[in-house]
Image 1 (cartoon, rainbow, N blue to C red):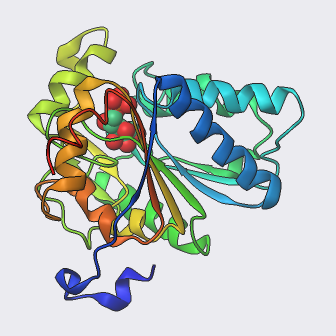
Image 2: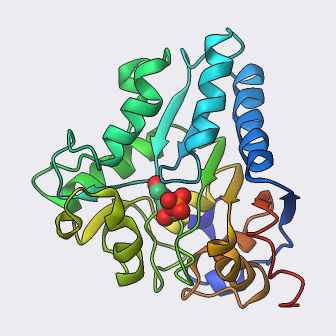
Length: 264
Ligand code: F6R
């Protein structure tokens, strides 16, 4: 969707009822997400993808790698944009999202190195780096599929668009929500070393993808999913902005979906 054309009245955007797929197990979510990525690339080898990091998509990457190793999918013509990255942080730091992507995925597939983009966590200026990344994103001619996770507790963040993010936001530096810091610091050997900020694609960037999958697994995501799907569409729950998009699928396991019925 061309969000730019709709400004400055995003509140006038139509609200859609997203597709919700509920699987009995987390593996159901992993298989569904991996198969969507694989099928897209089989049909459109030069597809552009926006991809997340975090705990949720680990098994998705593993399944896609298995398919790659069986020769079922190639990234030779594909382009990948990551959603976000901490700033500042040495990119070789094991807790950086660049390290996550390299070790789990990028180093094992055939993507040309110039076709994978992630904000530079060691850039001198976060704002300049955000502008550079946004320009690259705009040059691609559009993202075919964006895969997202959802933030902890009731943050309902997507990328690192924390509560308060505008629907019109673009790639920029953000301060992380205290609830995000608490959960994510477990990935840092010294929890106090987690950066307080990050560079993230904006909500408008995410909404411009042709198709979006939001993955959520486990009971810890249940309240956020219920708020996102059943609460108001507003900046306090940035994932609720996905309801402005006509082609979004929420891919949930039973635990993540457990509060949907009671919150009607
Ligand atoms: C990470 C990202 C975040 C995570 C979210 C959930 O690139 O964009 O929005 O998807 O914080 O993280 P996990 O999967 O660790 O629960």
